[in-house]
Image (cartoon, rainbow, N blue to C red):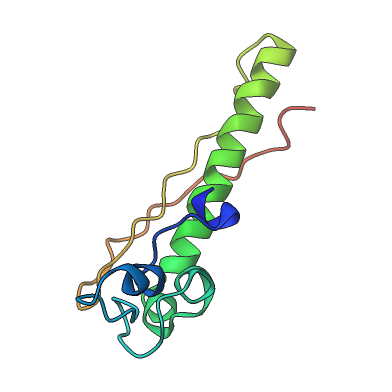
Length: 110
């Protein structure tokens, strides 16, 4: 929410307050660390899969909330819904863990 309201302390903003701060992105070190750069255009974050990880985590929260509220509304446990596992961030230089098979989630039993 801080990013939406322009109150997020970024390296570029911190550089205005402190002479010790250079204002550059802490990941790539090439461009100013502004909100748009940090949230959507840093090449290092893109190559490391950080944007996809964040996107997938937001989607998981949405699925969890919709599933919870559907269960409450229907007033029964939805046996056809299977919780999905979180996608784990894999740091550079490491190999991802073996993928587990995941059952498909049905349309909330409706």
